[in-house]
Length: 480
Ligand code: GLN
Image 1 (cartoon, rainbow, N blue to C red):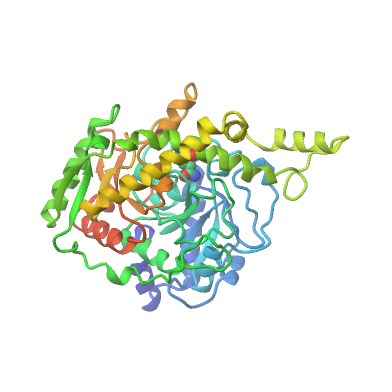
Image 2 (image 1 turned 45 degrees about the vertical axis):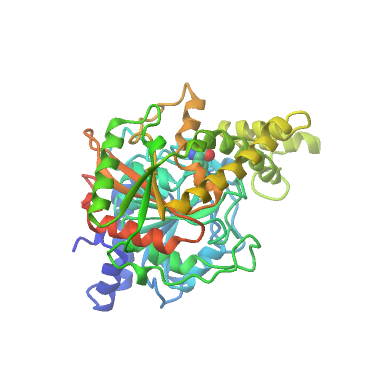
């Protein structure tokens, strides 16, 4: 077995059979970071061995299985910088609920993963600290905003990672790097300790190389949390136990036809998804093609609502309560200078747009209208799920793009969220799985989309698809 690309089950068996000790397994993964991360740049920090081992329980469902955490999820006494200068030296005084649950179940948290600043971006290029490359091609971005988490898993540095999803930040990089990226139903995973970007969309997401590994992590972190009143009154089942390798008998999968015919979509992406549709038919699924034209509005709705919420959420970083403080003669100057020096361009732009769309005289045109379209989008998905059990769509219109590709056209960059953000806007779960490889050897992914709290059906179907295909067994060259 190649430990580097082993599944959680395989690692657990190796530990149980004492083929490897937990310290050796951890060391193996830390050595991989040492050897390979200089070219990937996935981690902002790798913790020391003893502090990693001491932070977690010694037994549990994920005992001694190492993973990495996006730098916007609080780990007690560790820095949580959101890849921003404004939180450069901010140490979290508590664990996020997801982190506390992982530690209680024995998982080892090896470090902090690079991301777009405050999870704002699609390429991890907005990090104030470093560049993360796509392990398949170092001229290409890993995607974003959870690019560090995803690149680490794709390069076989760890078997799992946590990221966060506000508009597609786990699914899109997962598609770019050829791994599995999952976004839960809004309220399934506690946001306590996840630094807020757009609270009504934000959810912690999971990155792994197989669907079953996602199910293992989800089973540990999902479920009601009294510290987050937006979590659902729901106790999570053991999702992994329900993966049969077959799909639900008689199920219907809806293909969002207008998404596959969308303007600008890469023909290789369409071909890969058409291949996946055939595979799903072979597994026994009935395919129904349908139209969801409302998708055309999702990037605009996301743009407005996410900026509005970001502007209010990020007002707390003022040099008083957290992180950076730039000394100035007056309080007002201190606020202004701290935010001027602490935030990067993208974050500043989003705060300004957010305040504009919320301002008197403009809120009616922007914020209020976007909220109306959001409710129309919810009804459109509810309607579609009366006809089909699950939907499928591309995760992204094309494979990974090159660094700097959108430097001159930031608005074009926002269209990157076209296929993913509708699920954040409507709060429904989705998972991106690999389904192809472009001629230039870059992975292609597509997503399964499910109704509220239908994670079990979502994971069961995605697992059956994955097991019937070979895409998830491919790994980037140079990380043996
Ligand atoms: N690409 C999206 C953005 O730039 C996604 C962000 C996210 O999901 N955190 O906002």
